[in-house]
Image: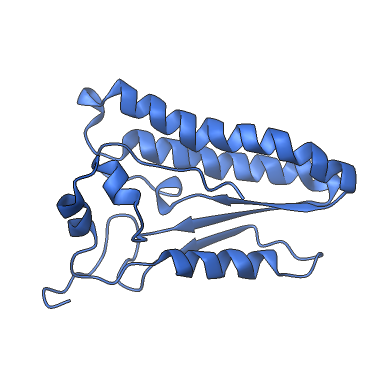
Length: 171
């Protein structure tokens, strides 16, 4: 399970923080690669296994000011596809789950502890929860050995894509 992922900051590329960029690249890309490099040989020796990568809707389409985060999640999407090809001869299944808005510590980390700003990300809609994602992971992992779920994009009902959602003032 590769669930290393974070966003740091939200701003235009021309004034982005190099430290934030390095943190996102190190966590979202290198973290996934390093863990996979350690566990995949063990799985290959057994001729079975299942790697589940947590991507993001940001890895399918970009949004304003999400530049480097979106790029790292696009890398997760590409790496998942490449892993599926490379690990196929070893019977290793590879799945990506790409959530939309999910209320976890994600926005608190992105906004460096600003809890009010983080709460506003989900204001007026009911986001996904960690349990929603956990249930999806369990479902993918519990398919019969001959079944691989390649890719799931999961969104709250109020979200159509990375930039379009419906917010209610009374929610």
